[in-house]
Length: 244
Image (cartoon, rainbow, N blue to C red):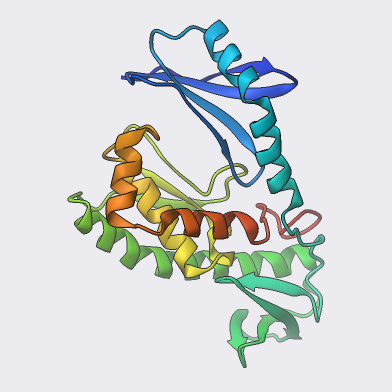
């Protein structure tokens, strides 16, 4: 049993609070932007939550500072020579104008070749690359979701891809799993970690001891993968005019 989340202001921070049928209060700071979330027992009131957060303000600010210090790409203009990430590696963009089919492909392990119609502006070029990103992430996720659903004793859940501003993945109470399209820029081991993390939530909703035990049992190096996920360049849902 859980209640709908609500927000509190504590020490200048916005804290998301969700109450669940759990024994202990759990506080976390989550990538990519340092979202602060508290999972609290049903009997714990807002004053007690505020007190717990105040006691951890120093730690929370240190965690948020780490996220702020992460490498960020400059705004993307979708021009020749620009850097773009794919599966944890950096590629240089080469744009070729063609009246034929618009395609994206990797060349020589160092370049991403974008073939677009003559006169296509930056937004149109980004949409072409984004479509390719989505297709590639779907190819990455499909086998992983099937494999880990079987390992965890689950039916393969319905899953979808979308841009998310503050989470790499999420799952609904109905069992639908969402993955952030930005994951396609992350190393494969980081993508696998997010898959295992979200599927484990279908067995254990919170981040308590049972959830940690599930990750420890099935993906012993999950902490290292999470750390790697959090230090590689951040992404946003727009390849233009923002961090990518």
